Image: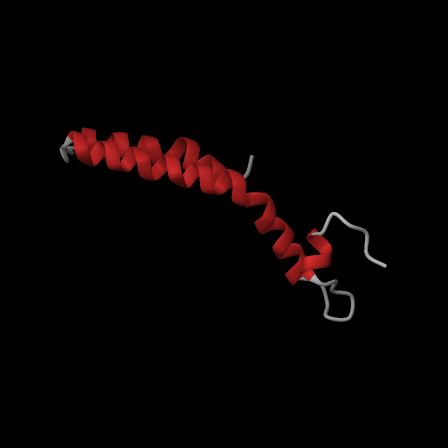
Length: 79
């Protein structure tokens, strides 16, 4: 499991819990907003991780060997 997913799934909710226990009492509305924010962030990381890795691999190749990004992601074979 990568570090970003570990942070989103485990560390950030624990950080929120420690903030509330440290004397910074948040209202229920603020807690709900943080919960929605973290849930959205987890969904974005979950579905965006693989395209991000593909893009990083594509962008790190040399220009002479770099395929077109559309043809790389197309399910149809290129000629």
